[in-house]
Length: 319
Image (cartoon, rainbow, N blue to C red):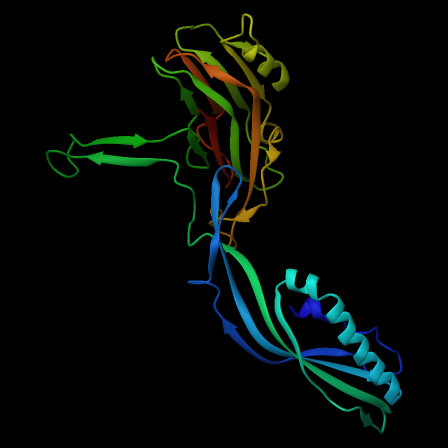
C-alpha cells in the first residue's frame, strides 16, 4: 500500500528536505469469514485458498517547497493525481481514499529555510494472498491396513490406494501406470506435473511408453516426443508397443508447458523456507487411446528414487 502511494510523492529538490509518507494510524479489518475469498486452481493438480485482509488507516504526506505558493501547488497536484487515478487505485486495492485534513504552510527556518505542508488521507485498503491451509504435500497414495487377527501380526495386509497420480521423491519413484478395463476404453489427453527440484540437478532418464502387456519384446523406441505421439495415435496401423526415453528428468519436464504461477508447498529439503513448485501440462492431441486391459501407459523413472531432495507429482488426464 505504502509503496503505491510513494509513487505520488513529488521529485526531491536538492536544496529541500525529501518529501515523505508516513502512517498515522492503522487498524486490521477482516475480509469475509475468516479472511477467506475463495479458491483457485494452480495447474491441473493443486488448489489453493484465496485469502485477504483490510487495513483501515490514515497516512500522511509531508511535502516541502521554497515558497508558500509552491507548497500549495505541490499539494494541489498530489490531490489531483490521486483523484485522476482513483479507478486504478481501486483496482490496486484502495477501496476508500478520503482526504481528511491539510495543514497550512509552515515556515521552517534556521538551516532548512523551507515551507512545509502535510496532508492526511483516510484509506481502506484490501490486500490479497494465497494460503495452503497448512498443507505440506498432495495426497498421492493412501495405505489401508487390514489386521483381522491381531494388530501387528504376520497376517496383517496392506492395500495401497492410488489413482492416475504418482509422486517421485528421494524415498521412492514408482511408475505412473494407466490402463483400461475389459469393458471400457481410456482416452489419455495428456499429463500434468507439479515439480520442485533444485538447480542444477537434472535427474536420471525418464521413459514414456504405450505398451501391450502380452508382448515380451522391447517396445519400439522413437527419438522425439512428436514422432512417438504420431506413431501411437495414427489412425491406420498405430504402434501399440512404443516408447520414448528422455535423457534426464529435466529433459522430460522441459516438454511441459507452464500451467500457472508457481507457489510454495511444504519444506521437503528442510531448509526453513517453503519449496517452490512449478505446475506444468503436456497435452496429447489427439489423445492416446487404451483399448482394453492389455493396454498400458507407463511413465517410469530410471532408479528406485531420486538422489536429491526433489519432489515431482505426475497425473494422467483421462476420460
